[in-house]
Length: 430
Ligand code: ADP
Image (tube, protein in one colour):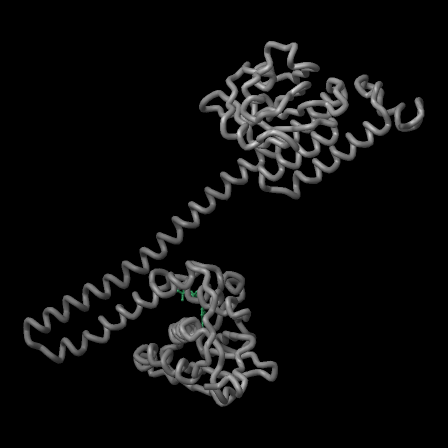
């Protein structure tokens, strides 16, 4: 302890009479605990975790056997245990079974009067609510309860129980606990606001996503509806030529729908890639086949350079197929009316990664949207796009431990996919 009249005890005590009896050690502990609790405010955003830390610090600084936080339920006008810390007794039973009305017990009294209530010996105080001890099989001797207030709004009550050493809680304990309870109240209010804000943002994002997706589905269904009608008409008139002309439109819309559903599924669920030796050239050709009609419609050319991949590659075939398909579809959709060109170049790097470049000679990606490219539901294509292609592809490549980026290119757009550990050692080949 500091000697009386030391530098520690004089200036601080002016205006704080409750510090008079405090030892240097008490003050050191209190200031340390206040400092820690304040620094936690910004660092812990989970209110429950923060309240546990505040209770722990209260227990230490007030030398209490147990500490708890009760929160106020405005609907029922009751207090319930949110945190209960102690080395003995059944804290879970407290949380399960005990609820206090306003004015009931010491905590209820602190809540009702909005003032700290300190009881040196609960056995001599009829206001004490013994049911809590009965539920937790804990024996309370001394108790200090302080209301947690957000300005004039009651948030809950912070309590410390049983001063270690048997004495009652001191005036200094009361003041320090009052400061702790303010921090706890602020933490709770902030956490609730943040929670509400996150929920609002989520709802807004879900609403936006659903609107975009519904628009996309509606377009596909319109395409399906009109092509089936045309085919019906052709069948009625036995006009085979008309039916054959409309058939690809129907097929294209079914493919769009299927692609959309596959992307949604791939995007929604985390998946551990199932790597098996795969024939990359077959994968690329299959994906290219799916965009063949669109390429033909634009008179565009597709160049494949797969020379850099000599044998099978270890990848999740379905996943990498989805990525190739999405990149190729985007490339084709970006092509100019005439002279369109898409290229796919693949190689295995010296360290065994599979590198695939999908490039086109479209307008390229404007700098201002580059940061949004991989965000789910970001699309510049209106009802024709879902904004899931790049997000899904990036997710799949990342699940392989790799990366998908927009690579620098002189003109057009070039996406670079890198999948590590894709080289299949010759002894693993089937
Ligand atoms: P969607 O194709 O449904 O719009 P994506 O996630 O596949 O969704 O792509 C998001 C956006 O990225 C596209 O709307 C487009 O603006 C841009 N983009 C993707 N690929 C290309 C490309 N090859 N050239 C130009 N812009 C592209």
